[in-house]
Image (cartoon, rainbow, N blue to C red):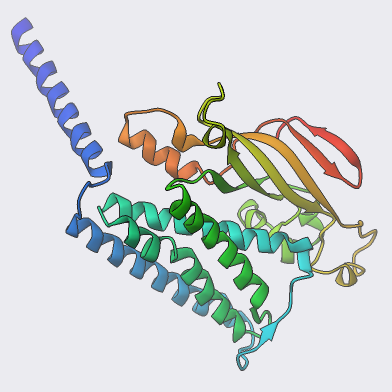
Length: 300
């Protein structure tokens, strides 16, 4: 009986270990071009982007009147926090696009050429859809922000072959959304995307990359944040419809962060998890600079 039980345990252990090893091999980037992986990436991205654009056109833009293509200047709206969101989205989509091509063994040149530009291409397509909508219009300010986000990723890959400065995101719920749920969101998911009062965008700088002889951990980052408050609508002139509309103001933050991708691990699974969640700033105490002076925030 002992021998039989032992054999069963060993059999199960070997099976689990084989499955885990197979899973780890799947997550490990290929050293050379893996044609099946590359084709899967191209098909998945093409299908995903196509579905997203068709879905937006059918379920989002259909609620608004379609017009001839037009441009709009919305650079003064939302204290430019929406532009920071465009830069963040272009940067992170480009990073993910390059990483999945790296996983499939594509050359570094093609990772940058076809992967890092994924965010810019997708967001530009959305901007074109905006151009035919009476509600928005094509914004050159959005295009400039998309260009900055994509350029931040590509320039660092060309210069350092690594991301020493990352664009990251954090969010806290606010009381402003309840005053204008149509524009700022009624649910948490909507507020995450639409309530600019709760959004903070960060430049997360890896200090060890710049000061290689320092005793700092290689995953330790300094984070510079930007946000705002009092934003019930895009412009101050459209906020007068609200009772006791607050005065809008900018917020600047100084905090710390962790570069999850620089945490040492031999696990392909953990590396993948760290890669995905590295778009979010890790909460740390922060100093806020605004019209209210210097304010300490326990977590930001």
